[in-house]
Image 1 (tube, rainbow, N blue to C red):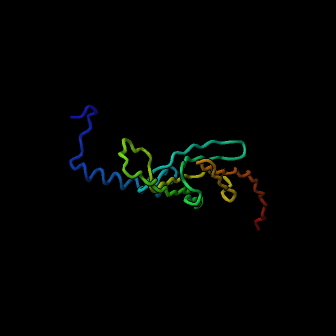
Image 2 (image 1 turned 180 degrees about the vertical axis):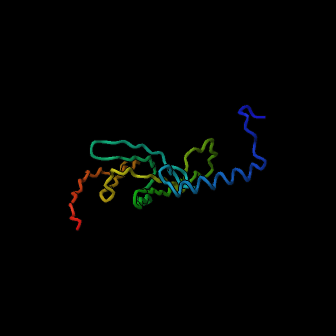
Image 3 (image 1 turned 90 degrees about the vertical axis):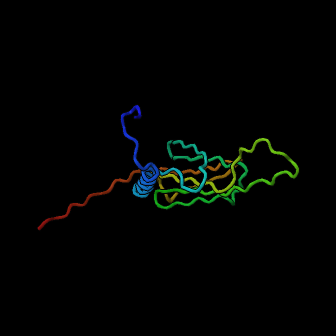
Length: 148
């Protein structure tokens, strides 16, 4: 018996499959915790806040700007990158290969205070910077209507 006192499921394969399905459904219903998509490698990202904006910075060394696709759908921002593999040296015997190649994806939920129509992106020296300006709070005037 495990130390926690909890019994192991009788069918671990089916149990794990159901758990995965529930996680996928929760991500569809509440994309707040959604950070990456299945089928792709995640891109390392830093985010920080200034007085006027939320800034996202993603490391994309060796990637051409034309291979980067940034798409916004409401409060969801999706970054897709296709990084091509370098041509391996003919006759060389590689000792270590740690760099990743292929499709990279990152999905980010934008905070509510971001002015989504004003997003802009810059790419310089292998770093993609997405600037998300904060919107101004707008006071809504209330008109009194007469009841008759």
